[in-house]
Amino acid sequence: MRETSSPVTLCCRLATLVAAACLIAAPMAHAEGPIVIGASASETGPLAVDAGYHLHGLELGIAEANAHGGWLGRKLELKYYDDKSDPGTAVRLYTRLITEDKVDLVVGPYSSGITQAVAPLFNKYQRVAVDPGASLPDIFVAGNEWNIQGIATSTGYLEGILPLAKEHGAKNVAVLSLQSAYSLACGKARHEQADKLGMPVVYDTTYALPQPDFSSIALAVKNANPDVVVACSYYPDSVGLTQALQRVGFAPKFLAATIGPAEAQFTSAVGALANRIISNTTWWPSLKTPGNAEFIAAYKAKFHEDPDYHAAATYSAIEALGAAVKATKSLDQTKLRDWLMTHEVPTVEGMFKAGPYGIGTQFKQYMFQIQNGDRKLIWPKDLAEAKAEVPYTGH
Image 1 (cartoon, rainbow, N blue to C red):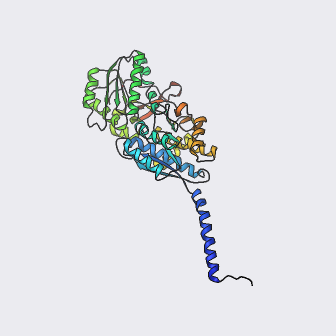
Image 2: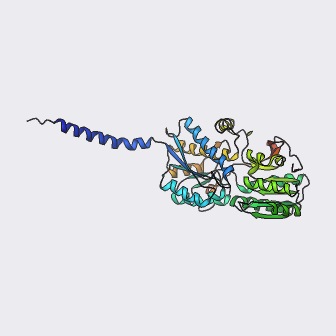
Image 3: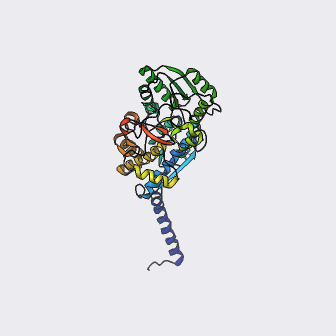
């Protein structure tokens, strides 16, 4: 006798087939979901102004990648948390991103100090991380296998200021350094450079943030009477030191500060005191790097402001990661790490190339001076847009 199926049996079989199809389709749907990139960002705390550009560059890099179809046929998604400019908070957040959120890729945070704190996590969990906020070379030493530097090293910040000052007759130097990993390395390098150039360091100090009043440091600088003041600083202390020197009535022949003067907010904060201050950068609008003009136009259109070198660094980190994903056709961490460690990637910031233990070897340093409200590249000489205006007048 031929076996027949009742309507109830047919419904059950259909339900079973649908359930099986869903189980098969579920992994496929997940595979076609977004590629999630995790990061922490210092949206609050003393690093917030500089880190804002860092975050914007990251956001733009991801938006531009999505506009060109994403990676591996999938859109990108940025998942980040505010680390409050605090290394301990960043450690907790990256642990969460990796172990709970299970992001596909990570990008390092802003600042060397915070990156130094989270770098061991990337080694522990074997997650490749391009670190566009980590200028400190000490992160990229024996034992590091997964962090790759994405910006020029801190020992080169303002490396052109003392030779330039000496050419103009400057004799001695004061070095002021924030008590942070990057700033201390910068200050030590400039002190050692001054010794080699025969320029006595007549005053050398460190300080911490938040620092409500820089007047005591400014008075000590005035008493030492240096021709050159070099401040290895971030934005808030660049502002505070500049204003404090003016309050005590001291204007050195050369005033140079890192990071802060690169931001548009600096000139708004100190006004005419910004004129003739010299600072460093690892990127510049006039560089003929691939895609630089397009990067600047897209950044202005999205954020209604000019980019700085922090934005260029994070944008370039996404360019480098994207090149690795495309070349390996994979999100496999080891494949991506090995590719990034052995290949060059042209970016808007310059040539991305990792040396031993992931240290960056090709990104360069430049110096600019604020001249009548405009930032002009003054060093190196072959790329200079203007000559340095001397002396700094303090108004």
